[in-house]
Structures are given as C-alpha cells and as structure tokens.
Image 1 (cartoon, rainbow, N blue to C red):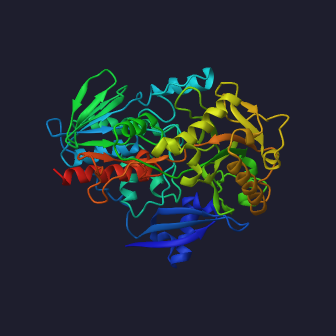
Image 2: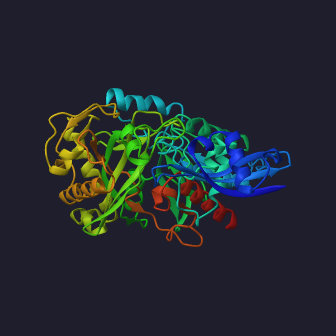
Image 3: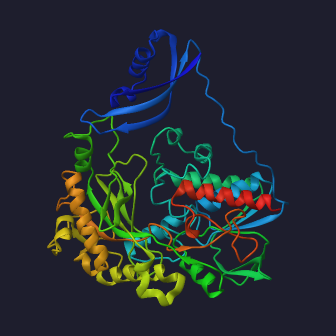
Length: 517
C-alpha cells in the first residue's frame, strides 16, 4: 500500500533516511518495520521561528517494495524531412519551442547569434580578465541564453501558464538532479546547467532538427504582411513561413530592427536598481536565527518587498552562496547580475534590489518612441562604464554609505572579479531611483535586523531585470498582429520572466504553429 503524508521535521531528520522513516512511522501510527521506503515528493524550509523546520510531502510504501514511477516523456520522431520552422534564439524559450515542434512533427531550425555553451566560456573569461565584451557571445547571448551562466533558478509563479512539472521533467531527463522536482525553490547551478543545455541540443539534432551557432539574424523578411524568411549576417536568406522570435531581453538590435521596419512594438515597464553583496555567514545568521548554519541547512536566501512613495522596492534574483558577474552585452556599458554554483558554497551572497518603473519615467526619451525604456536603460549602463574608467569595473559603495549619500573611502573585496571603483552611486542612478533605494534599504534594515551594514557593498547598475520592450501578439494565435507567421516569444517579447516561464512560452508558441498548419 502507498500513502501520502505531510509532516514537519528537523533539518537533520530530513537528511537522514532512517530518522525520517521513524518520524513517518510516528506520524502515520505505523510500525517502522512495515515502512519499506519513504519517497520525498515536495520539500520546503520554514525558517520563521528559531527552531528551523523542514516541510515535507512524502509517499510512504507500506509493506510494499519501492518502485520508481516512470515518467511519460514526449514522443519524438524524426523530422528531418518535415516542414521547417525557424526559431531565432537558443535560450529556454527557443530550445523548448524546438523540442515541442519536434514532438508535433515539425522541423526546427534554431538560429543562435552566439556560440555554443562550451565556447561561450572564453568570452565570459575575456570580460572578467580583459574587460572585453563580445556583443554576440556573453552572459546574455549564446546557447542556453542568459540563465545558463547566471544561475539556473527554476522558481516560477507562472503555474497558470502551463505545466511546470513537465518542464522540470524534461530538464531531469537531460541530466538535472531530481531535486528540482522536489524543492520549493529549485535551482540547477551555473556549473551544471551547461551540460543539460548541450544535452537538449543533442536531442534536437538527433531527431532531425538543426541548431546553428554564430548565426545572427539581421533582417526579418516580410511580403504582403506575411513572413517569408530571415536574413543572416553574411547576407544569406533562409526561407520560412513560420518564425518564432525568442531573442531574449537584451537583443536591442532586434528591437531596433522591428522599429525601423515599422512592425508594432511597445515600451514596457521594468525594474532597475543595484546588486548588493553580503557575507553568506551574515545572511545565515539573520535568516536562521543562529550563530552558525550547521551542516543540515542550505545557505539561506532572503526575499523582501517594500513600498516607497507608491513604488515597489524589492529583491530580485537572490543568489545565496553566489557571486556577482559582469553582464554587459556591448562595449561601453556596465551591467551586473548574480549566480550561484549548484552547491551554493561561495562565502558571499548577493541580490538585485530594484525599483519598479513606470512608462512616465521614460519621458526624457519620448523621441525614441517604443524604445524609450531601452534608451533609459542604456544611458545608465553607459554612465556606469564612464564612471568606472571605461572598464568593466563596477561603480560601488558601502551599503550604509549608500543610504546616507556618503562617498566610501574604501571598498572591501567583493566577488565581482573585474573589480570595483568607489563611486557615490547617485552619480550613476537617476535621482528618483537613488532616493527610493536609499529609503528602501533603510526599511529593509528595520525588517531584517543586521542587514543594513557598511560591510555590505552595493554595485550598480542591476538593469536587465526584464525586457524594456513588449512585442504584441494575438492572445489566441500568438502571432504578431501585423505579420502573419511571426510568433514573438519568451522574455525578449515580454511574455516571460525566467527559465521556466520562458520554456512554457516557447512550448505554447510551437503548439500554436502546429495548430495553424
């Protein structure tokens, strides 16, 4: 017999199968000898009290041998001779769109401007060591997209948009640990995600799909308001009647192309701010109410939201045991982001702390039309580069100094490897963002005792939280309202906010193409 049980246990019990079996026996009023196996289905941490608890949902095998349930995975057939669909971008939206196209009997041709996941590493190293940015291969562009080398967080609130578990199962089938299907806030880790991305690419190719790297789309070809194909950087034309546009939130050249071609696009609100780094030990002490985390708890995250003068100020992409990375996508700009390895075992933690923006904030750039938000974003990033001495060093300030508008005489070493330059960040950020963040951090300090410390360091800017542009589409067909056969998709089109939601959106676009055949 099998029985599902929910219970709370200590962190030590949660990691010890024999102790857990004993607790389950007590909870279910069973003899321990009758419990043949306990399979953890869901797991989350309750750190609200001093005594930390682990919430578990388990499947108990009572006088029955454990047999691992088999997952139903999509059935893929050879599509090498099937109708072709171009997918622009090999991020999660593009890759999962390609898998779904194969499942539906269509042949994906994936065009990626950047390099494959292995070769991208050289360009990431060049940013750190030489302050050189390759505009086609960096933390945002290349196989796997922005999430590959910036953490692989899989938590999403997009459960109404599609089957989250199905996306997780496909990732597990391609090499991810099964824990991503168990943990409340699943995470793969930058050190492990590249192999999973490579495995997905191999599946696409094995079933007849095509994946081309270093293939930058320079034009989208339209005749009589319908897609006819795309042009790539060497002038070659690739014909197609269906194109999924999944280029990510930083593909500014694509936004400019659509605007120049008078294809409908819209300015979209996003959030912008800074990335703050604390020691992981301090965050553990604050969140777990203890001097030392111990061996049975993971590095602690935090999540915080405040309102300052009717604007939301909140943590974004918090990375326990992680580092801050240089994520510029063009020369002449500085951009920060954060990531953690799978074990989250670095001595520092970091989080974006960002301010909600409104379309009215982009008024100084109204001459840019729907690209006003993008221009607003660019100006801040370029100013940061100038203040950093025209390098990939990042303007930085100690946290208490930041809240008081005080120049930091020194900056402690941080995980941001290109280095820091002490700057009063009011010189980087627009005044309304700077002042809102100052008040926000003061509120954080009242809620999270110990958070507001001058040993923490603020790095600026954190500017790529989401796309500054939305590419409209029909709510039913998912096609662009003006261009038949063009399917705006994922984060870059304004319809997703992370790996899982982007993957779900990629699948949805592919399904619509299959329905419209």
